[in-house]
Image (cartoon, rainbow, N blue to C red):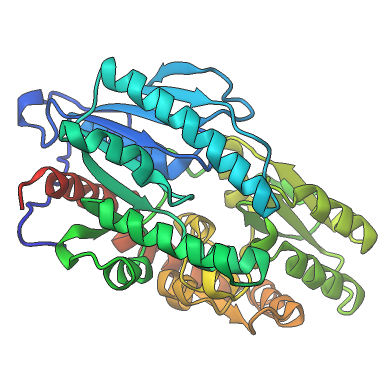
Length: 424
């Protein structure tokens, strides 16, 4: 990533639950204090932020987190696995511009209040803020006068997300672009989730190459353990196709339901069940759509589930599916579901999104962009060719372990912190 910072690699004595026989003084972030702020999801439900927190803890840092409350995560404060978690109220999922402004404004107020409380309490040396929104600099700059360094963790490309959600540009879109530029400018170091985001940081954000680090969101397979398949999850059908992820407008679940409708009504394939794991602003609408289409008996919505239940689903599925629409946002974003399917050795089907292909390569089939009939055909191709499906699944798991798992991301995360704290 950069020649000016040594990459730290954990040794074989380090386990998923912490450190064994470590001399704290020898750890790369010994005596450092970190504050992470995330608005999207509660922690530890937000897997990326939680994995980053554990990696920083294992490198010797004292870690505090500010996140929203959520179902199952209502406590205002708790210390979990040595991580200090502070939670604030958050309004319901917004769907209008005014709704987003209110959500972001109230969250920003709570985050500022909690950040100052932590600053005067256990303190922090580095403030690590995840978008969306691109307003982290408004908090981080308050602490620059005290010598605190700002790391921007770039989760979403907000100008593209705005355009996809609202279908237009205009003065608000230009404001989003400006906020993104300011956020990049104020950050000492940027953490990007893939090479496309890194390119944006260096072009739109004008960041130097040595100040941008790619830390992918690969799952930690030691926390998502393989278990025997559970035939009952197939609900009496021969095959099960699974979807894992957020259920929002841009995730293309309506296209997936159209594909299911085609498989049932046009192809006569009543032997396939679909398990849709996750929740979000579009879940209720998608459940209703499945009833309106007459395919509800073939589609099972689980809602949010535990890691143990997720492992059961992934180990029992025959194929994974990623129906994200091909658009400027999804084309450049790495979806966690793609890597989770690979981690569990599942061949998958997705539309031809750029970063989806970068991650999965030849271990996925690619349907015509936003074409549900093509998506259905690719699903059938895998289900009806077990040898091809199993070979692709084995290759996916190997590809994941060789380059995409969380173990490969942790040293780069630590290097980003070392860069942020350097004088260069």
